Length: 139
Image (cartoon, rainbow, N blue to C red):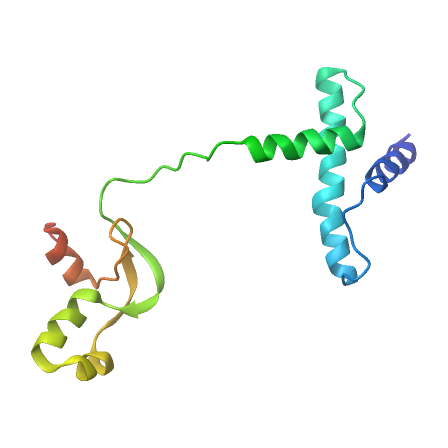
C-alpha cells in the first residue's frame, strides 16, 4: 500500500514540474523536496478534508492565486525603543559628539563600534548613548 502511495505521489508531482535542466542536481533535489512534495502532500490533505476531486494543476493554480491575494501579514512592531542585536557599526551619538570635538576624519578612526541598534530609530547606539538619547533610567 505504501509503495502505491509513493508512486502516486511521484506521478502527481511530475505533471507540472518547475525544475529546469540547467540547475545543479542538489538544487533540483531541494526544489523537488520543497515544492513538489509539499504541494502533493497539501493536495492529499485538501482532498481528505474537503472530499473534492481537484486535479494537481488546478490545485497549484489556486494555491498560487491564494498566496498572491494574501494581504500583508500584520507584524507585532513594538511602539517602544529597544535595543536589538545587529551588524557591527559605529555608535551614532558617539560619532556625532566626536565630529564636533575633533573632526570627521578623527571620528571615523576612533569612534566606538557596537553590535546594538534601536529597533524603532534604526540607529546604532552603545548602551550609554542609548539611555542618554532615549531618557531611560539605567538599571
